[in-house]
Length: 358
Image (cartoon, rainbow, N blue to C red; front, top):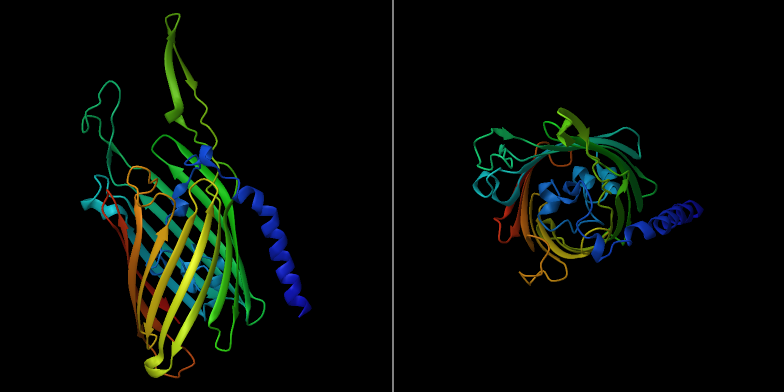
């Protein structure tokens, strides 16, 4: 019992230290953060109900939602997910997309080590200049955004699970680049006769500032008959810090091993409007899961004042194919996930992923 109180005391202390930075956001700071790709969920399963699963996320989806959920990996989990942003090539000229690949391995009886890579691409974008503003006259360029995660999650007791994630962020074009470092931390608490009640807290993207540098910031100008080259200084950008708080409850139906999970979450963004999310998931025989959710923020119903293209509605499904006999100790499965996120005036975002657990 004393160990549990110590763990809770440490978590409370960390949250108090971080409160000032997390809730420091105001209207003047909205949209001024860098590396905002860190706020796009690349994993299909959790995206299917609006990332409302702060308290009950399990497996590699925890890299985005709450890193404490990594502690529930049985032995090994490998996952891949592709997200076609706003219709992909059919919706945007550039065809923006995100690819995520992750691996989690249980290295101790109560500890799991995980690594993942998420890369965002924009396709081929035409180069335009003030001298030649027409697209297609100067070739194309392709920016690349990527972040690498290295995480460790630990089960302190059967009820308390925590984790920490170290994140390296890079953004680059052909002649300019920026990099930064961030840390995520999270905790989950499970209680109830059948572990049906869950609470979760995660703090994300606490780290360094970023600024661009490179030859792309160089400016050449004539002076006294000669050309001189100088480099402009890019402004520093803070990372998009956010605090997530979530709760969920499982309604268990013994017949056909049915489960209905109701979940809710609150996200406090330092540089964006705060989000409230509500989601519902139905599971049948631990094989088929259907989920839906809604993410609300201020003015989301007002097209003139809305500050996000996402209109809140999301839905998804998963099919888990067992690869081992029922009751076997080495439970293996292959899961296919799909997620839909509505948007306006852009097209909807679609995600599809697969994970192998054994």
